[in-house]
Image (cartoon, rainbow, N blue to C red):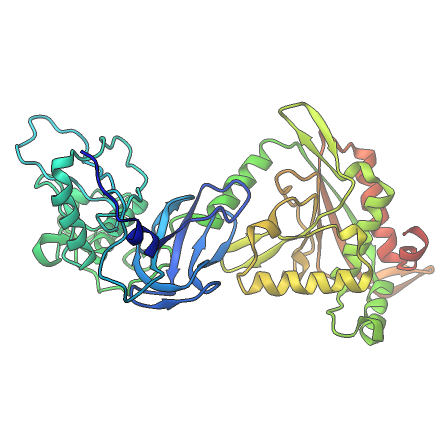
Length: 474
């Protein structure tokens, strides 16, 4: 049967799809909607915040109009290319809805001797006319037959109005966000006691089921928990007595964990250490703070350390490389994208300064200041974290002397900087109080041997001990 489409109606409604906000990313989680149906939006206005495996990103709408519908609720992971919002670009011209094919609706897993008249399981929010698809569950069946589409459409509309999902009698009643929460927490919905209207399982029911029963209880009984506010933040479950907290691992933190495991068990790490007198560097920092050429930029020891590493790389360019496992080649980089590890509420991220080797000291100071402030605000883009070649991690800000840093995937070296402390030091034949720190350089031993790694670390230490080498060696 052929469906006739009103071309004027199709032109009236425009759909905004989940863009590829990073390099090769395939999905993103909707953290927060900033608009609701009926709101007026303008070209360039931020409508939602999403989190990819690399960062949280705000998405602007590329056209004007009135929000017609939001295709997914907060907390939903959406594939790149799926429609997430529909906008009426010609409001007031009629009451027609966007012309689109009904969304295929996933059915539950096949069960033996299924009863007649079985209804489909609705997974995900949306309007019946939408062509947007939610990612299929494992083992999900094909789309619903055409005869079932009107019933499915009515059920979806009912769910959008908060009346619950339509499910077969053999499956627990729960909305998609609640099902996702249960999946994240490893809770079987069949074991959850529902307290919602009409026997629907609520978020509070799932949280209650996740809590262990006190030891004195004669048998496991799920107790209703106090209602928790709806939030787009990761679900947190605390046991009775607050002895444990379970936090679902996803987004940036999940990507960090996977990357670190991959790096640790792929690249053979070697770490070398050196303790150095940085008293002259600290004096230089104090002088630069008073220099008019550095006005308006942040000057600190990290700035000099970063410049020292860049000079060391210039003197030992072979360290600035990457290992290509597929082609069994060492890829020499003729540019330095300097990564700076930054601790944020979303976890550790490593944005990098593009072409840092070409920047003057004032330019490098400005770049460092912008990188840090952007990271603290949670506005670092995926592009800012891609393509790094070497990294600096400043563990000294936490009062730590040093560490053995793990390589950022795809990079050959990472420099850890310890706390700068006043310590007794032999200076010009006498023991005197001096500003001292410990540096640790980890490198990929497949492409950086001990001699090369030692030269790089020794050069950085020499510059920090005698900062005038920045001029003579640069």
